[in-house]
Amino acid sequence: MKKITSNINTKQKTKPLALYKTKTFDEVFKEASKSEVFKQAYNEELTRLRLAREVRLLRTKKHLTQESVAEKAGMPQSVIARIERGESSVSVDTLGRIAYALGKEVCLV
Image (cartoon, rainbow, N blue to C red; front, side):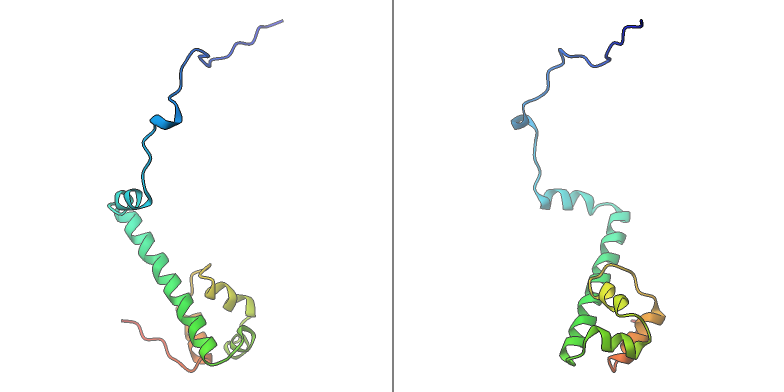
């Protein structure tokens, strides 16, 4: 029978948790925001969340349900819900249909 040995050095000492340097969220964010890839992804996410908030705000100001907006826009209610939660990207076509249902138009600046 073959003897199985471990490659783990059991005498290796690990640092106590107190010796690890912790960083605040601001420190981590500052470091990450130096990356161009991070900046682009962060800005895209902010745009998606702002759009989600704006769609929901317009809908609630007009006292409309997600279902009624979806019906006017010719799409399932679940699409409106996902957009308002900021879960998915929105095509310009879909955004235009939602804007029309809310009595608005899309203007790219």
